[in-house]
Image (cartoon, rainbow, N blue to C red):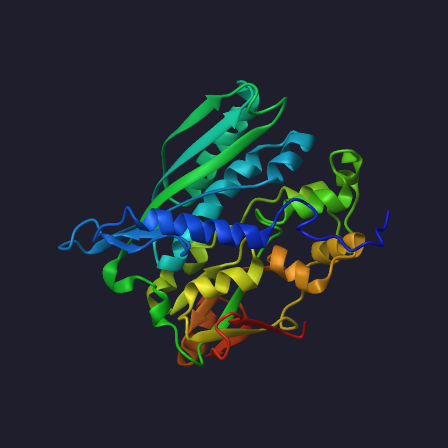
Length: 344
């Protein structure tokens, strides 16, 4: 089953370079609509809006999907955890602003109305919302024959939260010498599934999802459908005592840490400072994937990076006992490459 040719995300249909160029173009278009209330728009994890100059809070919003994790859910006919995943992904995208969720809305587009499937998805969404004290305020279920085929469906989430203006986490709060703590992920979360599906050919060989991942007691499909972990509970009590947060999603460390640090800074990440979970080694070996490509595509076991003042390390480590010291911020000597993975 081993593939001698090295697999890449690009070969799997995901071009991160084109995606970056497109997002920059869209950002320029979006900025033409801005008014004085926009604090932060596209490019950050969440858009930040000042509802009233006299108010104490900013509103923070974000939207996202769960990608081709949905294809795995369809093969295994298990849709609850993708509902959980979309909520938790969106929560993790407003946390880097220091915001906590207020309400959530969903969109489900499909070929037709499969009552059992849609119910299961919404049950997962509702469960995750209740766990986070976030209101499932509404949504849309669209039947679109010829747009979606057979069992295909899409799932998108929209979230709004708030943060006190004095507690807003902007990149300007980060400094040279700040430490980076990593919070462990519980799996792939919602990124890299197109590459995984390509490597294991899950469409034509769905039985591979029943295979036990080496050095674990879990099936491949079971690991792939683990819900995207929410970091709200872990971080709620310290959001006003840290300098920054990076949600490690699509694009890995390279794309996401720069979104949370000052442009004059770089991040040095010691990749040997944590044990990379077995699922990633299984993926890498089966697809003969270059290690750098793995770090560009997956979270590699770190779902959130917490940036702190080094003088607060002992205090915050007590509050985040599962965190791992994975790096630090240094002066940026090359603005085009402000993340360096040491040990790669």
